Image 1 (cartoon, one colour):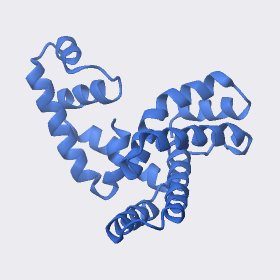
Image 2 (cartoon, one colour; image 1 turned 60 degrees about the vertical axis):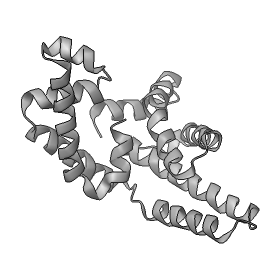
Image 3 (cartoon, helix red, strand yellow; image 1 turned 90 degrees about the vertical axis):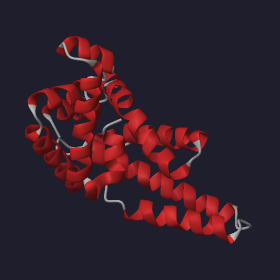
Image 4 (cartoon, helix red, strand yellow; image 1 turned 30 degrees about the vertical axis):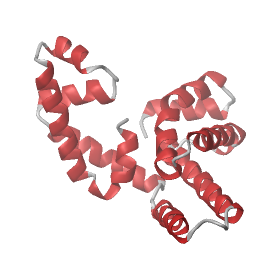
Length: 193
């Protein structure tokens, strides 16, 4: 977790609404798509994510300077998705065997997913090492796309290269990340959205 995240957590802990809004805006989309991957129900996911952020606000005093915000948000989201699936299973006992097995597989996959702070620290370490290993132009294009959320055309203009070259750089970077983060693939998809 970087100093910026620690500062946000500390401000949130003290009841700062603006830091909560920053956290909400910067994390909502990733955890929403994470939940959607498992539940395939946008309305349910939207409700769950609202509950996650309500829990964050309600439990802000329990946060510490060491709280890994990504791990906290993904863990709470995971647990709320598990509860939703359990509730859905009990409400819909009439599901045919195929649907029940599918729900069971999704439940097991989600349940076994490691969202601990240690896992996120390991992911952050691997991401940084991978970024450091990328060729400079490739890294720059990737960071502008994924971290600055710039369009390929904007990156091409700023770097003074062809848009196809930007696409190639980002594609190459993603291939390398898929290899280095293969053990964390379900989370990687949402961290780079």
